[in-house]
Image (cartoon, rainbow, N blue to C red; front, side, top):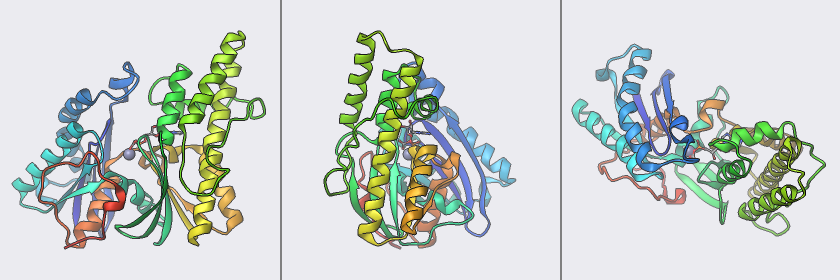
Length: 342
Ligand code: KG4
Ligand code: ZN
């Protein structure tokens, strides 16, 4: 079955073609980062308009790359939520229009299920069951994954998501949007011993996260340095490093706890922040000690992309599931998902 995947939930237009027999045939991505950069974050109306401009050309590009005509498609999968409603609508309307015209089945995918399954596109995919750490701009969640659509939320952020905290700290450091990779790059030059920031909610039991206090702590430290006339380039790098170390440590501690509590031996890490090098190194070291193993998507499939949507959609389509409604779901808790229903 050849499935076209369409992702338009936020600021990336992603399209991919996944073949259930031959794997990923083609994928293309258009990032709106430059468009939103001057506003310091995503402007929803601009995002929708840009998806409208870029989506069909990307569909043509992917089909051309695969050497296939539209008529060769067997199904279409698109992100139905969660995300920005206008942006989701562009993908949903395009997918529904194409599926009607081609008379092929259609599936609305949960964006976070897409992220969660992204490591399945790699050469050594993880087997079920596993614990998933979903770390993106909108979500920080630990999920016990027993199978496709069988998800139990173990813990989540009570305030900011990890990626959101990275983006806000980037703003404090006058770094461009999106801030995660920028903060990580600045932190490379930082001294690990100069500041030690708190590891929020690690001193009590449980698997929830909170990053808003850490953000405030970062701001207070920067203001203090400024008042003392000591906010030079090195100090900014030291702060970036202290912040990154605190986020990474916190995530590692909670993942270790989740694996121990659930008895699982595999951890899937997905979403934009899973691209972070220090997070990967920290998790790999901690999991080796536990006799467990972490699985990640390749770099470009950590952030939003069409391939993960094509893959997640293909899994459900193969099981006979179909989507009839055009209505996107801007808010859609992952735990509401169920195994495929034919
Ligand atoms: O999954 P994603 O592309 O979009 C959402 O669904 O939110 O994640 C984007 C988030 C942004 O907050 C971005 O700053 C963060 O992932 N991010 C990173 C890194 N690369 C992307 N954060 C830390 N380190 C990185 N290397
Ligand atoms: Zn995402």
